[in-house]
Length: 80
Image 1 (cartoon, helix red, strand yellow):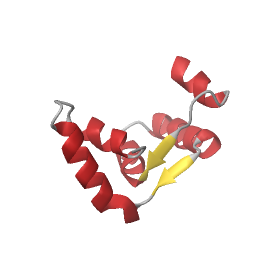
Image 2 (image 1 turned 180 degrees about the vertical axis):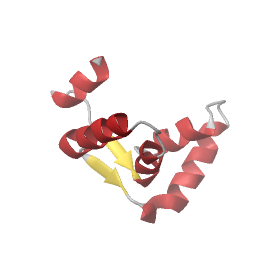
Image 3 (image 1 turned 120 degrees about the vertical axis):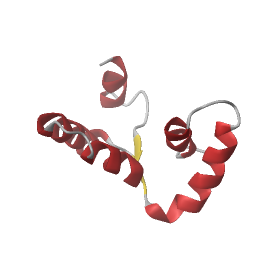
Image 4 (image 1 turned 60 degrees about the vertical axis):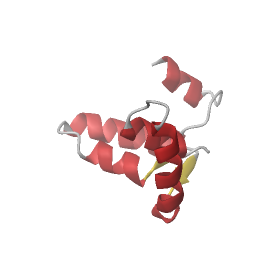
């Protein structure tokens, strides 16, 4: 909730991507999916599309060398 409020009041920027949308769509709970999609629609500032896939793969591989798991590394690579 704290991070959501930081996003709402523009203290931090919400980046999201095609990967984020896929993960959200995989959530089995309809109300949760809808809530998250609506939050992204209203407060998401930067969308990273599939055209950056090669760059994301490269950066996430480098990030994973530090011990960070794959999904987290992929999400972190959006902002690089």
